[in-house]
Image (cartoon, rainbow, N blue to C red):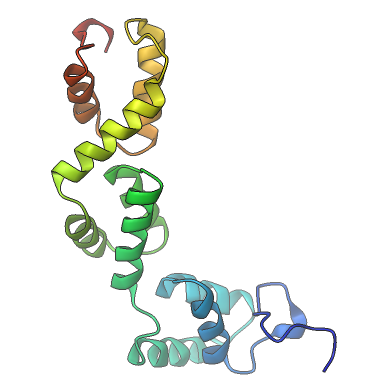
Length: 173
């Protein structure tokens, strides 16, 4: 054997790794991490794979359940929500950017987190962002609100969380 590792997968730009079998190449990628159908198609196209060969590989991957956008969406929602503490809006944007349709995104979000779980996630995020800050300072409070909105939480939920903390002030919004 040469100096090349057997576990190395083809990535766009690797001329030596151009897929002789796009199905096998995609299986290697999927063995490392979940990918959406769109991501697999884009990666294979970047390697110069013919469109009909991409279609055939994707059909086989779906038939073998190696490629499942619903599974990807569900796993991503759990990871982004529970481990990364992201809110529903940001997760939805990220899933859409991965090429998942609105219906699939909504179903994955609805199945993964109840409104109570989203509220608890927001409370934890607020506690982290506001730790040691005087939220009666309007500028600091706005920064915390903006950070939580970038994290994907709804403004009304943030306002309610601030109210529950006893620091609500309608005049700064």
